[in-house]
Length: 549
Image (tube, rainbow, N blue to C red):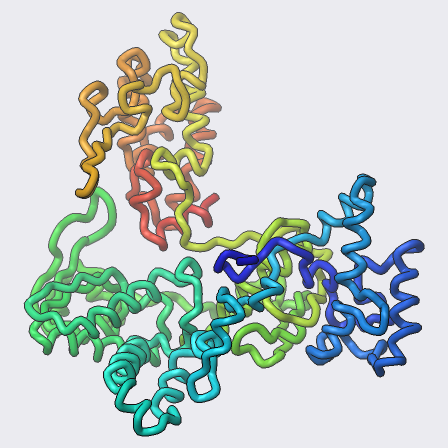
């Protein structure tokens, strides 16, 4: 009831209170006990620590859980860090204490359920000495092993026989698709696209359907080469069960494992859309204009640098111990490209995303989730000014969001249309050419270009707007032309087309538009339309748009 099943509450964040875990209490590890006034709490704690044999000179990250409980919850009349913040709360009528309280607030593990998201009563029930929270916190591969050797008496085995069969089957399917490193309590929002797809694949394996067509879009994303063979084996199992499997894929091993291959190209955008080859993989070498053929046969290769840049500065993550990381110390060189690799589930994302990124973001004062467990962040932090996470999440939440708006290129395009003669005569400004606010947008569809009809118990229907015919703007805005093109025509152009179109004029505004769009071309996204909704972009495309930004 405290966290309502989320396992997290807004409270005092341990990582904000003790940001540098390589310090001891004596060395001012507790941030809120620094300063002339608050250091009195530290002195009282040190004075009382000897009564419970608390090691005041031991680094915080080396303290046992029992010792941390003494520091946080108090002992022998000393209130601890929790008591300190209760005292601060009692003074919150004073603004300086309210500011202090806010400085140390964040998402923390629920103190009632300990992150299990269940009432205490649920932990009273145990199977072979384990609570349900213990089981869902285990990696799938360990959980599968535990269920194989579960200790039950004869009567319990009779009752649980069908359940155990189903549990063992489902866990084995998750292992087969290379997800043995996941825990069952992992939030679905934290899964990559490839992981989500492989979970669906495991579900399909368990459904025993036949005569179905399974369509998979790049299931090997995030999968190490070691696990690709297992994925191919799973796809074969689906096929041998009497199903058809269609896979969109770039991975060489999966391409070579196909019974039938369809190669689309030869390039992207306007230069694509043709069948370059279809047939058996062995005959693919006959497709002369196929990039797939050229890379598979080694005619084309990704160039490997002959020399590497020297580095001397670095960021040092010490004592990384989140999830399955074993208290490791890792140096990340500055000024060079560092690749973190390893088999699926080895801890790469935990190290880079949960620890390095979040720790750096908090160092620069950004409001992000608490980083994973680590001792300290050291090195040449003064040489960097910020950190960006370029992930595969959508670039915008609104259906009106598109690459042009994200890169601010649409601002320059709207400015250009506002400078046309008709716009000046009619008093149209930049805002008039926005489909996010009233003015020149189509008010029938609110600048969406489509109308969504709710069908209650059936899937909603999306239709092209009858008023603007999908152009998103009112006729008054479409009457304004730049070199014979309406603003809707510009949004229908691909990045390559737009760069070519605006490069024909060398005026200031046109140059700004080209400069905004050029990074998209540089990251290989010249084929996408300027007005293409961000919701239609793939994870990789979203990531490259962010990289261009």
